Amino acid sequence: MNMKKRGMILGMIFLLGMLIPLISAGVGISWDKESALVPEGTKTCLTYKVYNPWPQDTAVSVELSTSLQEILSSTEGEITLIPKDTSSVNAIPVTFCFRTPKIYEKDCWIGNFAICKQECNGELKTYEGEVEVVEASGGEFKGAQGSATRISVSAPLRVRVQCIEHKRNFTLIYVVVAIIALILLLLGIFKKKKSKSSKRK
Amino acid sequence: MSSKKIDWLEIFLLIIVLLCIFLIIFQNFVITGKVAEYSTPSNVSINKYLSISFSSNLSEGIIFGDIYSLPAINQNASHNYDGAFNVSSMYINVSSDGNTNVDFCILANAALTNPALDTIGLGNETYANSSFSSSSAPSLLNEIPLTLSYVKSGHNISGGGSNNYRFWLDVPIAQPSGDYNNTISFKGIQTGAVC
Image (cartoon, rainbow over all chains, first blue to last red; front, side):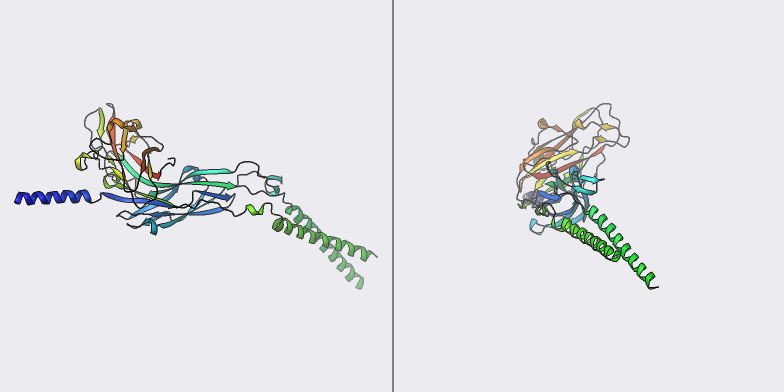
């Protein structure tokens, strides 16, 4: 009987061991956009959501794949703590921002900045990559010989940089002409006043 | 008479100034090219979500232990067979709180390297994966060398499922002694996406 009891207890312990999930903290990502059309030279922020439906707290960071890093300007909340049992419904938003570079060549009369026009004949430049949510505590190795492990989840992202077509901008010429005309006008008025005052004397 | 001439010149200059101001406004606020192309971000509004988690043994790292005899061929990682019924205790779970099946990708950041920068070739560290686990799966017969870029190491695992791993290491006879380390990354992506 004692042996039977002992056997039952051992069996229960074994079953319990099988049932208890031997799970460490995990990472989860929720996204609702895989592409963005952004005018060149503008800053854009995208929000992804991270969650952790697992039974341990976790800390995550959001990273961009190499192809997208060249347009990355800033991220907010580099490491985010996600409490255990955070379901996808209660996912925590994480924002990162990027500035699209000026990639389409302008046709300018002066340098690369004045009296310019922009024609958009070529294909739109597209940056393809992924937004990766990485468990921040990963990569620490506890043994002597072997490999540390790192876990992440990712969502694809395609950023298309929009070319903004515009006609030649003559603003600089108008400004210069206006200033010259204004100076001449003021000089004329000044001379007129001066001659009037000298006549009075 | 001369005063009248100067007046005409002033009026002319004033008209030029006003015309320039008008043109500046007109150029920058009225003629703006294809205005409709501004501020029209376009995106897909389909919500997807997935979550994965290491088993506790896999989160601690892939340990090959101490090797006393060289060459070592297919040295088992410590957790290759230490689960119940000799299954691997190194696996990644896919949460049922997700709406997309998951593919897995794996890479090593470098070959196993010791502090003196001796390396065990990347091809010597191998793995096999399987969506089910038994004493014979994942199998050594399906071993694949690790690579420096992500490759698929698991396909279409649905919520509640897991991707199981075993790792092996070959150490050549002339390998200098020491502790060799690297980092292996596992990434979960939506099924069908590129690593």
